[in-house]
Image (cartoon, rainbow, N blue to C red; front, top):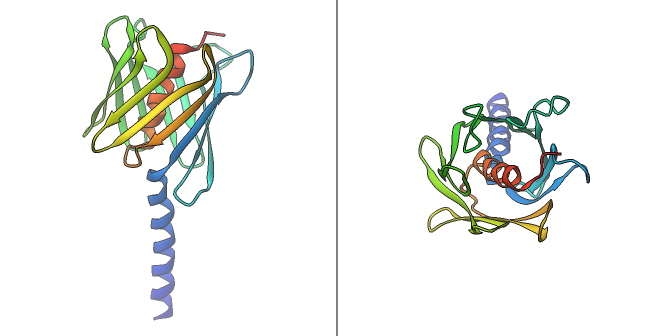
Length: 187
C-alpha cells in the first residue's frame, strides 16, 4: 500500500511539472550582445513563478548562416529554418509539439504572417506597415500576445505582453523569432 501511494505521488509530481510548461508567460527578449543580433535570451515564468531563460540564436553562429536557428531552454528545443533557401517568407519551426509553419501573407511583405500548426491558424502582424516596433496577435478565444521594442528603432530589447495562456510556447517562440528576424540587422 505504501508503495502505491509513493508511486502515485511521483506520478503527480511528474504530471504537475510537465503540465505547467504549457502555461509559460513570456516577459521580455533581449539581444545577448550590443553589437550583434545572432543570439537572444527570452525571459519568461511558468505557472509556479519559476524563471525560465530560453536561448535563441543561429544554429551555427560562426558560419553566420541566418537561415537556421535554435531556441532551447531546460524543457524545450525548437529548430527554426527557412523552408526554401532563397525565400525569406516561409519558415518552419520544429519542436516537441510538432511542426509549425510561418508564411508571409503576401510575398515580399514581412508585416503579416500566417502561422499554422496541425490544429491552429493564427495571424501575427505589425500594427502599421511602416513601423516594425510593435507586433501583435489577438483572438477572442486564445487571448493576445504583443511584442514591442523598449525604444523605438532599437531592436535590442523587447517587452512582451503575454495574455494567451493556452497558446503553445513553441508558437510564441516562432512569433518572437519572426519579429526579431524581420527587424534586426544582419550583424
